[in-house]
Amino acid sequence: MKILTAQQIREADAYTIAHEPISSSDLMDRAAAACFDWLTKEYNNQQTFSVFCGVGNNGGDGLVIARLLASKNLKVKVFIVEFSKKYSEDFIVNLKKIKKSTAEICFLTEENPWVTLDQNTLLIDAIFGSGLNKPIGGFVVDVIKKLINYPIVSIDIPSGLFTEDNTHNTIENIVHAKYTLTFQQPKLAMLFPQNNWFCGEMVVLPIGIHPKFLSEVETPYCYVTKSDVKGWLIPRTKFSHKGTFGHALIIAGSKGKMGAAVLSAKACIRAGVGLLTMHIPNGGLTILQTSVPEAMCLTSYENDVIADVPDISLYSSIGIGPGIGMDKSTQGALKLLIQNSNFPMVLDADALNILSENKTWLAFLPKESILTPHPKEFERLAGKWNTDEERLKMQMNFSIKNQVFVVLKGACTSVSTPQGKVFINSSGNPGMATGGSGDALTGIITSLLAQGYQPERAAVLGVYLHGLAGDLAMEKVGGQSLIASDIIEFISQAYGWLKI
Figure 1 (cartoon, rainbow, N blue to C red):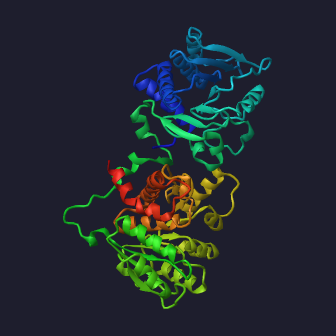
Figure 2: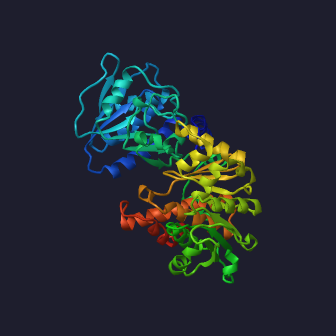
Figure 3: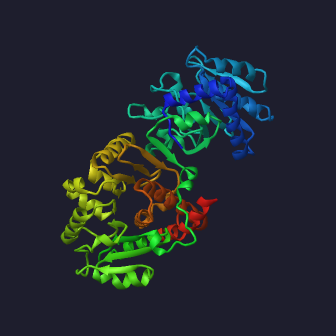
């Protein structure tokens, strides 16, 4: 699902109006009807609504929603926040219509900025939309600050939030929504952790934007959903055998951290690799062979750490990092691996920490390798940032400069590519913020590489599959109790869900 800029959103509307064809007022009706349907299902017992409308097209959306709610004999108050006397044409059309309904209408102005609200009302925020490009001011600031004490559903985007970059915005003047009902495509700003406080839960509502425009418009940003990745799955034919699905090598573990090796091994196998060999410290052999009998094992000559690498010519993918530690001999082993590898590999955890202390090695990484840092690991590699927008730019530049994929883990994990694209993941939940979750992701991506997926698809599909397995696990065990082993257990169900 492509993520569009504010300018592209305007172009999408204009293209749809011209080529469907449909009037702009009818397109507004369609968008508002989608919001009305969601509101009456999610808040089916709600009797009182307060709709705050600006005087632009976002306010027009709010007027149509209010009229539809009033048509169901619900108590509706409309507050027109008149920050300008210049009304949009579609706002004027719908203002005339709402006056014929049972909705009560009140104008909020500089002279009359506020009225008392019913404590049981649900607030609908339609003051400013995605076209806002400067911080709000005047009496509207006071209106927004008084809304904070009520449950709010924002239409298209929380009023005051810019669609892309909020670096120079006044964040204390942005609506805090419980839900944001956004139209057709998500907005980039809604996917940054720093803006979750404003957006709440994002709900993307299709409104029939012309498919030709969406297929042809170019953007570096994509919000990854089921429909994006389900067609990527490589089918298994009747005469396939274990050699068909690759032989992965995972280099993992050290004394006290063999659990990381076990989790990455289990996830790799569950994700469908044909054969898996684990290269581990000698002292971890019994643990690994007992915990994952499906994996073959090679051991380092050191008992507690990995100090060497095996012949890598036998393998179709390599993953390294889970639990390996920072021992000097382990650093030497990673350097040797980088020097000898001639195909993309997956680097995670301590492999990334070693790289951050030896940044000249980045230039020698095999092109299109996949790095899977959490934010602190990425900070060690790339430097500090002040905002999520700055972090995303740094991530994109890092991928382009070093010709690697970066899987920056967290809520809405982002995958940046050597070509400058970014895939932002939609699956996953807070319960996955648990030890070992990243080790499982390393195993999944390494498995997909071994099976023949190209690095971009291995990274993007691996992240989505990992998050989806976590979502399915949470349905069974709950967010507080979810552990990495649960994620691995539900990989098979995630595959099944993708095939539906």
